[in-house]
Length: 131
Image (cartoon, rainbow, N blue to C red):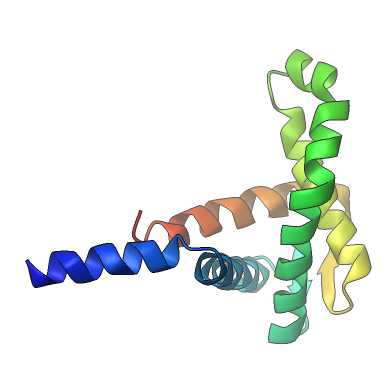
C-alpha cells in the first residue's frame, strides 16, 4: 500500500508542469541524440548542448508555430488524409536546424524522415514514464 501512495505522489509531481516539461525535454534530447547517432547522414548534432537547444527550440516552435500552420493548411491536410502533417513536422525540424548552431539536418526529406524517427523514439522513451 505504501508503494501505491508513493507512485501516485510521483504521478502528481510528474504531471505538475515544470517537472513534466523537464522530463519531456530530456526525452527529446535523448531522442535527437539517438537518431543523430544511428543516422549521421540525416541528422548531425555537434554536442549535447546543441541537442538541448534544438529540443528546447523544437518544443517552442511546435507550441507556437505548428498550430498556426496546421490551421492554415487544413484543406490540404484533409485532402491528404493527414499525411501533410508529416510535412509540417519536417518543416519545424528544418526550421530548428536553421536556427541552432551545431544541429544539422540534411535537406527537406531528411527533416521529414528525421521528424518521424525522433517522434517514434520520443514516444518509446516516454512509455517508461508513469501515465
